[in-house]
Image (cartoon, rainbow, N blue to C red; front, side, top):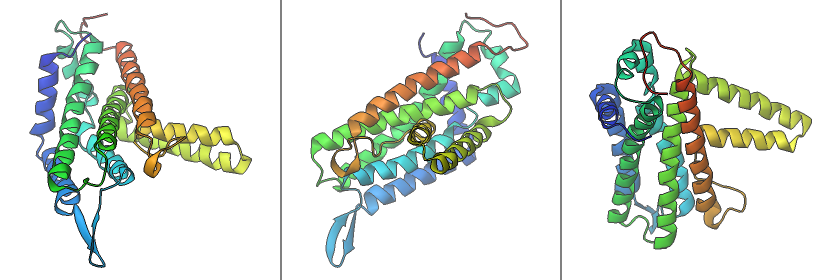
Length: 255
C-alpha cells in the first residue's frame, strides 16, 4: 500500500482549482501572517509583548486555524467523486481502495503541513518566538505537524462514510451526540461519561492542548503527538475499511 501519484496530484489540483477554496485558503494565510508576523509583537503600556511567545498561545492558535483550514480545503475530498460517479472510473485503474484513501489523505495533509511550515517560518523570521527554548518550539512544531495529519485523516474518514449526510452533517450529528452525553454526564455526575465526551472531541477535532499531566503553559506536546498519531492511524484505517465495503456500479479492482 502506497500513495498513488496520479490520485495525489489530481487531488492537489482539485484543491487549487476552486476559486472559492483558493481565496479562502489565501485569506487564511494572510490572517496567519498578520497574527504570527505583522503582529508578532504588540505594545502594552509601552512594553513589547509577544502574541505567540508561549507554547499555550501557539497551540491554542493552531487548534483553531488548523481545524478551520482542514474543513475549508477538505470537504468532499472523497465524497465528491463518489457522488459524481468519477470514483468508478478511478477504480478501473490498477489501484487498491486503500491506496486511493491514502493518496487523498496525503494530498490534504501536504497542503496543511505547508501552511504550518509557512506560519512557523514567518514566526521565526519575525522573532515572535524568541522567548521560547528551541527544544520546546521544535517539539510543539512536531506535535502540531502530527495534529495536521490527524485532522486530514478524520476529514478523509468522514468523507468515506457511506451516508448522504456529508462531512458537515456527520460532524453535526456527532457533536449533538456529544452534547447530549455531556448533559447526562452532569445530571448523573458520571466521570466516565465526561471522559468519553472529552475523548470524542479530541478525536473529532484533533488538537494540541491541555492533557493529563500537562507541562509548561498547560501544553503536553508529547501526549498530544502520541494521541494524534493514534487518531491518524485509526481514522485512516476506518476510512479504508468503509470504502472497501462500498458497492459501486462499475467493475472494481483491488482487494
